[in-house]
Structure formats: C-alpha cells, structure tokens
Image (cartoon, rainbow, N blue to C red; front, side):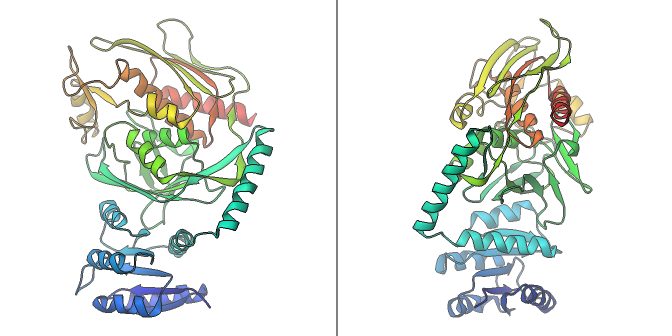
Length: 424
C-alpha cells in the first residue's frame, strides 16, 4: 500500500494543492485543518510523514510538534511556513522536526524533504546493513589501490544556531545527509535556490569567503567547509540564511556536532585532488607574501604569519592525517581582529556580529577579551581558513601547502591555479 502523508494546515487551498501534488507522486494523502485533532488522526492512520504548518489558529504548530514528538516520537514531522526564518527552522529541528521548508516551496524541494524524512525513518535490517558494510569495505579496499576514497555524508541531521559574524543577524544551519554525487550544497529553506560549493560560485574573499548562485549568496562559509574537509564529507545539504553562524569563531563546535552525528561512507568513490606540479602565487622568499602547493601524499600545511606586535611572527606546520588531529590542533583556533580594524569593517558593512565571545580582539599592546587557546592561535586560525578555502575544489586535497602572510584572496588564487592544472 502507498505510504500515507498527513497534511495539517488551516488553509484549505494549501491542503488541496499538497494533496494533488503528493497524490500524483503515488502517496496516500489525508489532510485536516483541525490542529487539536491531529494527534488522534496520527494514532488512527499511522502516517509515514506529517506536513505541519507552523501558524495554526487554535494551537501553535511548534506546540503541536512538541505533543506529536511526546506521543508519537517515531513519526517524522516536516514543518512548513510562509512567515519564518532560519531561527524558526533551528528551533523546530531541535524539537525533533525532520525538516523545515518555507512557502512557497518548489515541488522538487518538497519531494526531496519527504524522501529524506522517509529514509531517516527506515532502519535497514541487521543483515542488510552488514551486507552493505561489507560491500563498502570491498569498495574502499579496491579504491585505495587506485587512489580513490569513499564518498561520505553524515549519519543524521545536525542543527546549530548562532549569529553571523559580519551581518550581525541571528542565523543557523541545518545539515542533512545527501546521496552520492550530490556534492556540498547550500540551500534556502524552500529549496528553490541552491548554491553549490564550487570554485565558480566564489564572489568575495575579502574578510570572509562568500558563495553566490541564482541571485542568492551565503557568507562566511570557510569555517564549516574547513571542518567538512577535515572529516572528508563530500555530500551534504546545508540549509541556512545569508551567513553561516560564527559560533565561537572557530570550527570546534562544527566538529563536535559532526562527531556526534557520525560519518557514513558511501558506496561511490571520489578521487582526491592531487598536485601534479608545483604552483606558486607570489614570489617565494623569506618575508615575502606567497603561497605554493607541491605534491604530497596527504594535506600538509606550513604557514607563517607576520603581524605587528603584540602578535608578531608565528609559524605552524600541520598535517591533516585524521579528523581527531584537526580537532585537537586546528579546530579550536578562533578568528581574530584588531580594535582599529572594526571601524574599517563597519564602514564596509561587515563585522556587525563581532562580539567578545566569538573572536579574539587585539589592540596595540595585548589581547583584550580572552585567553589564547594556543600561543600561536592566530597562525592556527589561518590554517583553519586555508583548509576551508581549499575545499572549494569540492574534493579532499593531497598537497604540501607553504604559505606566508596570506589570506582568503591568496588562498583563492592558489585554488584557481590548482583547478587549472587539474583540467589540463
């Protein structure tokens, strides 16, 4: 029998539209505008998925979500709304919603959301899971001989809320697993606009890395991309507003959430980016600003930072051999700014979300707002950013990167040079 979808919305027009769309896709659709009676309907009909409007006249959709999860926790609920933002989505997802989509939504976005909810609700039998694991193991062993590695996604959805470092607005991210070959894609709540993580979608590398496509942009993606690079995650759907939350200014919380969710190896493989020949941006030499990439078996970064006092010259060498090494040595390093820089950032419409708890603030004499996590935390954060910017290539990178006095724009120049040699 066809899987049942329950639509709970006070607008008959919306219910009728959804019923038509989903019926055409082979679902059995039941609907109601009676929010208080939805729990009885769920108990009686055992729907595979519930589509629940946030704004209901008799009972708030968020409150109804709480009740559904308390009484029928196994039923996936997708929240729908025409008057919400990423903060509403984060709140609903934390309460147990399988997804959150915004009206007017696209048919493809709606069906993709339902598919994810159904997949998340269906556990493979132990024998089937074991067989899949053995198959993936064979695939990984075979692919390792030719240099390919398993594609990866996350084991379950992740939700995080916070504030944008540059916009100053409340924002958040919802991370969903994605099938092999999907790549990493930023999306709106309605799924109508998607911004794939691709080199050609980079529009700004001044004080952050910004991606744009189809008239939509997403700022400050580098910290999240850095964590994804470290974990080798190649397929992911990221729902967010105009900026990824800064959290504490590092990538540590992203890593903790990825560790808790788990990483799933997929049957398909991907070939890492391997450097064919040395690429240099700038002029090599002590004290010069330059960045270069050379062949290596895995990602190795030698970074030299040179700022006025009180920061001074710092050097770090980091080898990305495991997510654990990244979490221990790089992920905790926070972004930093000089007090004098804030006036310039403000004039540019940036830095509005800079607070005492999400960056390292430095004046002419000292760090003014926190205790450093590492003596060379500034250089380590530059490495964090570089690992994120390298992931604009869409695949894990195996290279020896040497950089001196560089930032996002230099990173992008190197990434473009690497991409050009890969295409040759």
